[in-house]
Image 1 (cartoon, one colour):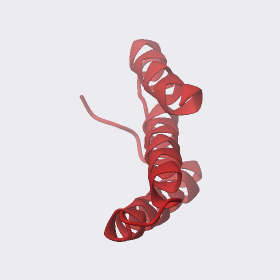
Image 2: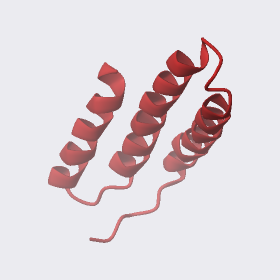
Image 3: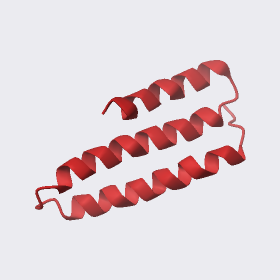
Length: 77
């Protein structure tokens, strides 16, 4: 499956990368009491960001629906 590169996907991808970096930093401080909620929220946010970026780049409607469902996983948590 070939995805179509769109400029609109740049910001969600960059945001997802930044959120992954935050989750790694939160995991490094796992002995702190507040690191677990930050870790869980950042993982959910990164799932949503990458799902949105792939949805934007999807060539077919069925693929876009699949990535919208992946986004929903990140949105719910």
